[in-house]
Image (cartoon, rainbow, N blue to C red; front, side, top):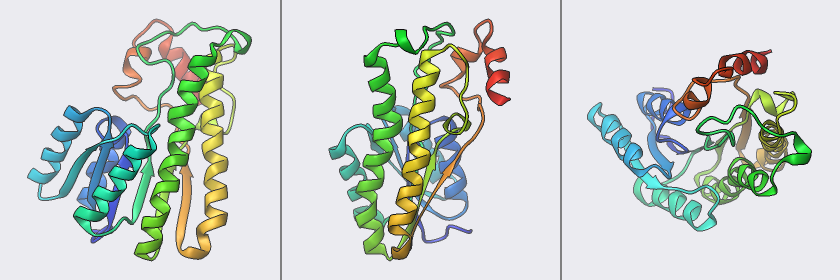
Length: 221
């Protein structure tokens, strides 16, 4: 029960890594607010956690929309009294549904670049900005940003979408450092996590394609 009496908001919490985080946090005693655009999956997870004796609430959250972030944070505070933890977990690869082959950077569509950056980078900024006042009111808190090994090293040479993904995750790493420096004196910690490739419902269609596992090995090294 390391998180007993804590309140956590997890973006992209309805499935994959986010759902695993929500289950773990609830098991450790936290009240969990599951923010996601996948309302059906989120409600199922909410019911699952409650059936096991935990506290959970699902809220609709598009991380690119400031008003939805404000609504999610407000619901956490209104329902559970405060906000202690934010996990900026929501993200996209730009390769959802497959699409192993891709152009290089000079052929990458600007619309695709903007979409990846909006979710992976702007979404983390909006979540952080919105959560900080609530954490300040609670006397401190912890922000965990899910970046990627791709936020540290380049991956998949020749793939423009991979470059956009890496750029977005690199920005998360540096935003994390800025947040930690700016708010540490207020008792608000900020750390980033940089996992390798994890098989989740988001990545499964891509991995199941011919060559998908080879790309996984490339990224792992």
